[in-house]
Length: 311
Image 1: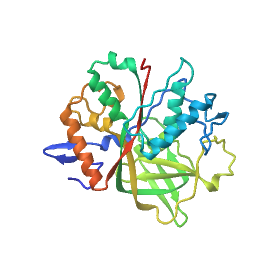
Image 2 (image 1 turned 60 degrees about the vertical axis):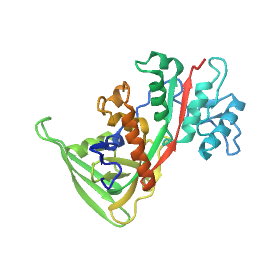
Image 3 (image 1 turned 30 degrees about the vertical axis):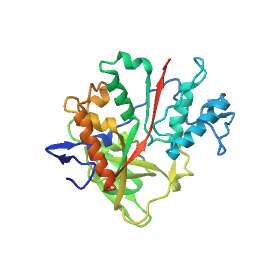
C-alpha cells in the first residue's frame, strides 16, 4: 500500500485510483441560474430583499436556510425535502442557492426526473450514480510545495514560432527570501493558463508541477490595475519558499467509481456517458475509503442531490 491515499493503492492485485481525479477542472455552463451565489440570508436566517442573486420568495428562502443549517449539522442526512410550486416560482433557484451556500467543497448533484427514464441504463443504476455524485471524500496528503509572491515573470519567446520551445525565469519571494527559478515550456503554459502575473501569490506542487493561484498580495492592493469585486487579497508568505504542506482534495465517490471502471476510465468523466458500473468496483472503493477513514487519511463530505421535475 502506498503512503499517500491519492496514489494508486494495490489491493488483491487491483488498485483503487484517485490520483487522476485531483486535476479535474470543474466546468459549469452559463444558464438561467448562473448568477446565484447563495440564498441571500442574514445571520438570523432572515431573507434580504435583494442579495446574492436572489429576490422574492422570502418565506421559502428562510425555510431553505433552516434546512441548510440542518444539513451542516448532519441532522437531516438520508432524508428528502420536497419543493412544490408552479413553474417559474423559483424552486430550482432556491436549490442552486442552497448548493452555493454550502460551499465549493460540498458535492451538489442535479438531475431531472425525466432523465432517469431516458438514460441507457437501469433506473437503479441511474439513481445510484446520482447519489454517489452527491457524496464527497476529502482526502488529505502531505506534499512538497513552493509558495511565494510573484515578483517578475520573464519569458523568452523564440523569433520563429514552433522552432524552439519557450524558456523563461520566474522570481518568487517570501518575507524572508527571494529566488529565481528557470521555466520550461510546461510551466510557462501552466502560468498562462492560470493567468499568473506579478503580485500574485501562488503555490507550485513539486511532484506534479501544478500551479494554484491563492490571490493577490496585499502589497499590490493599491495598484491601479482593474480588479473585480471577487479579487482575493492574501499576505505574502513567510519563511522558506519550499515547504511541506498538507493538501486537501475533495472528490466524489462517483468520480472514483468512473476512474476505476475498466470499461470506462478517465475520459468518461468529460463525456458524461459513464455507462453502468459493476457492483464489485463500488464494493472495492467503499472498502478502501473505509480504510482511509480509519487511518485518518480521508473523511466523508455529505452533499445534496436535487431532482427537478419529479411530478
